[in-house]
Length: 301
Image (cartoon, rainbow, N blue to C red):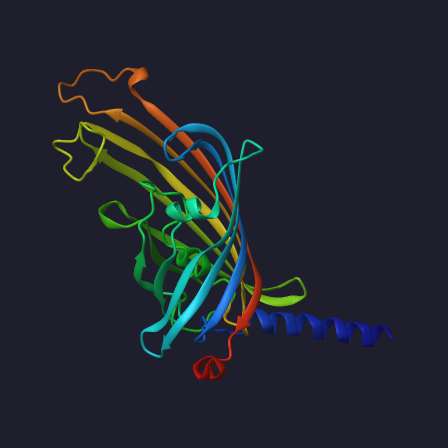
């Protein structure tokens, strides 16, 4: 009996090692008319970027249902997807925050993007929204970056493999291009499902300039103020290997920055002239359901 137990134990270890050593390839497998819904919670703590009250300290919690709809699929260009809000509730310091779905859509508008099977995102089109700032790791004007958060390499992965890709948060000249380092952590059972696990991290220095009217400028010589700081975060993501979609994600990020005047005469900057802000962001996203419409039936109606 002891010999049998030892043999079985050795076999289990060998199988585990073989599984870790095996290579796997993941791709997003969107189909035409596919619809995905995610329950998302975002919590902001610190100097909040609330329109009309930027810099107010407190805790803002957002509970949202986010949708993704696939319009069409091109084998070369990828899938064209629509993303947006289906439901929205907010709390500020534990009290209901009077923002309805229609008002929320002004800040987090519906948008569209093209998603390559490996996760590269392009062709972004959206309403622009009212936000004139960036959040660490969360782009309210491009929800595709949240629902397709990883760009996978075009090669099989082994446990422990690392790679880098760049994601754009925001738009226009003020968009942030954030290098992200991803690691394939293997497979893990979540809610009874065997899922592919990826961890990601980013650490980006912040340096931006404003003119005398507090408007962003690229001209350092004529700038009146400078903002410097750091934006960093970590993400843990679980993907459904058969369905080819994100199943669950957890984000933790922070942003610390200081804005001060640029004294061209070389005089000392006083403490009261500096404006410092800190913000932490945590988010969870969980897939709610999967529905694939009957394309033939839809075409016949």
